[in-house]
Image 1 (cartoon, rainbow, N blue to C red):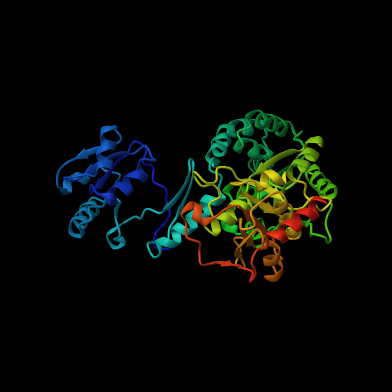
Image 2 (spheres, rainbow, N blue to C red; image 1 turned 90 degrees about the vertical axis):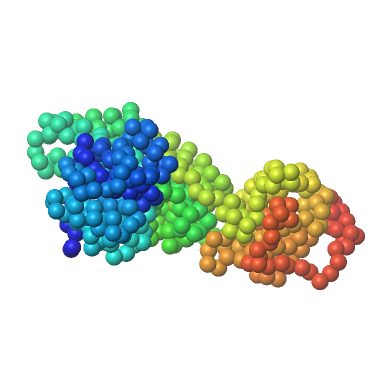
Length: 481
């Protein structure tokens, strides 16, 4: 370890930044998070630094650097962009024993500025000792995702409770166990959620030794499959969970982001195959939370879009269990974005619907005439198995046979496949191309309407026969009959 990690107290301290360009501005932006008194030494400064000086947030001394400028400073930064000038700043600080950092010159520095994750008063510093700043940024990004944005609120609440806890619980071991429960359990969740009344109730119960035993449940949307599309809140709730209740469509790679020691319960529903009933899923959620566990219910896409979250919420609320919904990126939006297909287009497509292609009895009952109207655009979930029925009903309701159709199978995953076709050829495309994975069928959306070029990754399916008006009329008559 070349650099010993340490946090310097710069409250009301004098800090010098030599330089007036972008490198200096980058250092100033970090220092502005502190209460340091910042002085910038430069003959010319950027508009950003000028504006900060006008706001009274720093002082600018418009002159060339000289050694006396470092006198009385707690820290010195050299960011002039001139190697000889930076070396002079470094030498002046060295002579006076003042810590100095020179941008992009660790050999001239006595300290380095790490990558910082700021959850004031919680601060995480990451350093590779200048060897690989890109790796430090990668670690910072992962920590930013993992740590709640308002974690500092929880830390400040804990700081304010220290005297109260010390006075209420004299035994050191008991105090430690209490802090673990407060900072890792329902109190933490209530504070981070902004539920102050609930936080005070849990705190009072903990201090009396009567904390409630019930856990809580988060209904989490895990998106269409790509782990990079998980929300920050989803990651945080997964990390906090004791139990994971997992849908079939949740990508197994997403589970890598959960705690390793979390219990895993699989409750998949296979179309026309083995399935865990919704009633049984509801019982599992209630059972696990009633045992005092934190439960993450993992669903593909978004919980409120064909995810049956309403039924699970109702069951949990009826049992008196706290439940939270964490939205996810729904498959229609993700798949459309992946293939560059806008779902709304000014002057062309002003309304976009999301439909289910199947129901409990197998055949959806939609307003086919409205869906077949000119300008209608929609996405069909779970429609592969009923594609012939969907096609027939839309054509019978007056939809044009050449209506644009785009099928995205296994959207956002490595085996993603996208096919452009027409409504007339929908059933044949699915059958002949062997589309069997989870798919979204887009109807009524056209790249030309948006002025967008169809991506080469989207294959075009065309049947080698002409659309027959008589054949379509016969299909319509069959449906009506």
